[in-house]
Image (cartoon, rainbow, N blue to C red; front, side, top):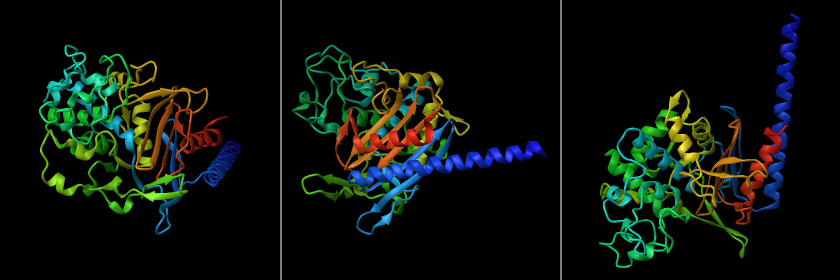
Length: 378
């Protein structure tokens, strides 16, 4: 009986501590939102393999003043790249391609830096941003870099030798999406749904028309000069007409494999658990431990970037964190877990101040640190 009483006391104390931690986190985030212009913030905190805290702050829509909810979805921008990279690793494990394959042969047209015509640009180079390809000619169509379609195709390449220099490039990952499609024989958005989202029990995707639009959080770009938030409806442009005329293996950028995933903060946190656990979550192995480690291994020492996963000590000062950020249309997002794999944090804003600290959006970084200080740090 005495043992049972002590157990009840421990549960009560733990509950009180958790409530106090949550109150501290919410007070801290409220202070951040008072200091900086913010439309809304959705957050999720993972300890070990469970979401221990999730909350939404601010507005889903400034016009209606509807409050943001934890199940609201966002176009998460460049964190989407990790879904594409995860899909590639599945195809590598299936023996359908190699990271060292000639990326041009995989995508279906010649990829060669004119300054280094004999240097093969590999799939690994695309995925690590070491390809020497840039976005100067745009990245929403393969025509930009296809020598048969664009007379200025050479402008898509920087002067550095492929494989030697990190140059972040969205076109890299839109081509990765096309490679997934051509290799798997399945439309890109459907492949990610069937092989990554569904096994993990997550609701999200790249195709707007396949999702519940009422769940989308409106995205706003903040203009410092006018101190106003400008709506960004193109963030959720369905592109239905283009999809109706879809050309397999060529139209893939319609779905933006480089940035077009739509998902909620809690479901993104559940996806993050899979990478934190080296490829396994929700009782399902999505990629092998070897593949997960390869994604998280730095290939660019200057930028500490692997295959759609980066390592940093600047998000939480002095602590090594692994993950990715995103920014597009005014949205800012972050998904990071600790190197010791004991916790992880997801923060998404549908519009906030555009300032940066240590290479990260200040509002996002401050929120991550507030959650860490309040809910994780002992």
